[in-house]
Image (cartoon, rainbow, N blue to C red; front, side, top):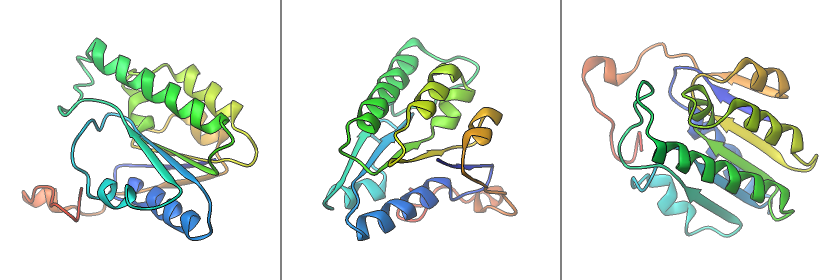
Amino acid sequence: MEVFTGDGKGKTSAALGVALRALGHGLRVFIVYFMKGDFPYGEQKILSQLQNVTFAKFGQLSFVNPNNVKEEERNEAKKALDTARKAMLSNDYDVVILDEINVAAAWKLIDLSEVIKLIQEKPEKVELILTGRYADDKFIELADLVTNMTKVKHPYDKGILSREGIDY
């Protein structure tokens, strides 16, 4: 199991890099997007054109306020976790990516114990990847590989907003 976390850019990009490499070797990939709703992320456009990759998006277009989580946001996160578990246990996929699950767990959209249970249920042949800031210490402990993306500098700090094709 792999965890990509930290306050730096590149967590999802790293996971997608693993997916791209896996697809190049004929492996089957499933990606579950937590908290990303129907926003038009560029990678989803190209992923939908590739063989052996499936993805499912959950959440709403608006950003989650961690101090005021809505019931519908929790419901979406629960559906995402259920979808992830089903895909992981289906024998249909070699790589399962849970994008932004660390944030969903940290902000209590999903119960930490349910994520730990999913990790413990992982079949040996499945590569499970968790992304997002705030990875819980238990996720880090259970992982085989952990990468902490550290922000040194970011365009946003100078007022440069997210750029289509570069940041989403």
